[in-house]
Image 1 (cartoon, rainbow, N blue to C red):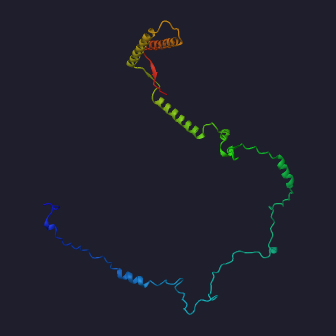
Image 2: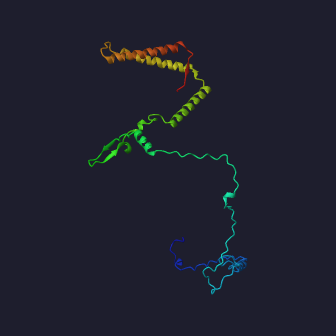
Amino acid sequence: MSEYQENIKYLIQRPKTPVIKPPMHRSIFNNSIQREFKLNRGCHQTMGYAEVKVNKPSEFLKKNTRKVIRPFVENTKKTIKNPVHCPCYPNNNKPSPKKKILRNFLSENVVDVVRKVPPCPKHRVQDSRNGHIIVLNEAGLEPSYVFKKDFGKLPLYIEKTLKKNETIRLVEIERIKAIKPPLRRLPEDERYELLTGLKANWAELTRQFLLLPILTDSVTKINRKTFMENQLGNLEKDITLLEKYPALYVCDDDA
C-alpha cells in the first residue's frame, strides 16, 4: 500500500526523535586567556601617562595652579639688531636706479579717443509689437559661420583618413599585381563561347534592323536606326577580332 493512501495507523501522532547534539568545543587555553584579560584590564584607565598620580577630590583644580611645562625650542633665526656694524661687500651687479618718467594721462586719453574706431552698428530686429528687440548676430540668427576660413573645406582628419585609405588600396593593388599577372591567355573554349554569343546577338540585331520601316520621317525612327547601325558595327568589329586572332590576352582587373 502506498504511503499517500488513507490508513488508520497514520492518524496516531508519532513521537519526535530527540536530536542529540555533539558536545561544544572548549579550548584548553580558555582559563588562561580570561586571567590575562582581567589582569591587564585597568592598566590605562586614566588619560595621560600611567605614572602621573591623580589628585584627591578635595584638591580640586584652581585657576593658574597647574604647572605647564612647555617644550624647549631653540631659536634658529638670527636677527641683526644693529645693521651698521655688519660687514658690507661690494655688489657690482646692483642695477642703477630708474628714473621716474612723468606721463601726461590727459593728453594720452585725448589721443586714444580721437584715434578710436567707432563700433559698427548691430543688426537688430524688433520681433514683437511691444518693442522687444533682439540682436541677430548674438542670437545666432545670422550665418556668420560662412565667413570662416575653413568654411566649405574638408576637415583635416577626414583628409588624413582618405589619404590613408587610398594608400592602403594602392598598396593592395600592387600586391595583387605582383602575385597575379595582369593579363591571361583566353582559352579556346571560352573564345568559342564568346564568338558564338556575339554572332547570335548580331543575327538578332540584324533581324530587328530589317524589320525597321523604310520611310524614316521622324526623329525617333532616325535615332533608332542610327543606334542599331552603331551596335551592328561594334559587333562586327568584335567578331572579326576574335576570328582573326586565335591567341588573345585579356585583363581580369575589375578595378
